[in-house]
Length: 266
Image 1 (cartoon, rainbow, N blue to C red):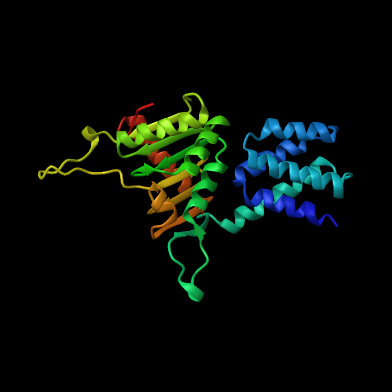
Image 2: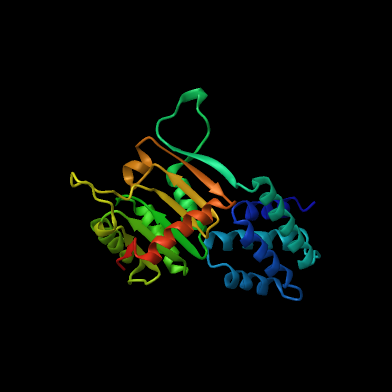
C-alpha cells in the first residue's frame, strides 16, 4: 500500500538539498482544499527547476492514484521525516561520493560517478545560486547548455576562469543558447595585478576546479571544463552533499569577488 508514493517521496528527497525539501514540505502542508489541478499549478510556482517540477508532479500523481484521502499535512509530515532522515544519515560533515573519469580498473574497480554526470548534477540542482570555478573552458556544450538553463530559471550564476579569452568564449557560447545577454550570468577572472609575481617573471594561476549549488552541494575535482577532462583524461574528485563545506567554499569565492580580487567582466 502506498508503495509508489513512498518511493516518490524518497526520490524527491534524495535529489533535493535538505533545506529545500523542508521548504517544499511546508508548501505541501498548505494545499488543503485545493483541487488536484491547482496543486499541479502550485508546483510551477514553487519550483522553477524542471527536474524538481517533474519529481513533485510524480509525487502528486502517486498521491492522487494511491492515497487521495491522505491530507496534505500527512504528506508534508512524510516529506519532513524523509528529509530529516537523509540529513541525519549524511551527518554533520555531509555525504561524500567519489567521482572519476578514466579507464576501468576491471573486476576490482570501485564504482564511482562520472565527472561530467556529477558536474551536470550540481548545475541542474541549483535553485538560487551556482558557483563554477575552472582554469579553462573548451568544447563542453552540455555544460554550456546547463549553465544557460540555470540563467533561464533565474539562478544567480557565477563562473570564475583564469583567462579573459576563456571568459569571452564562454560568454559567447552561453549567450548563443540564451538568445540574449543575461545579467544573471556573472563571469569573473583573477586579474594579473591581483596575483603574486615572482622574480623570474612567473605568477600564480587560478588552478582550483569546483562547483557549488545553493551552498549545499559541492563538487571538487581535478578536471577543467574541457572535453578531454570530462570524458577522456584520468580525473578524480568528490561530490559533497550537505554539511558546512559547500557553504564555506561558496563564501570564500564570494568574498574574493566582493574584495575585487576576482573581477567581474560581465
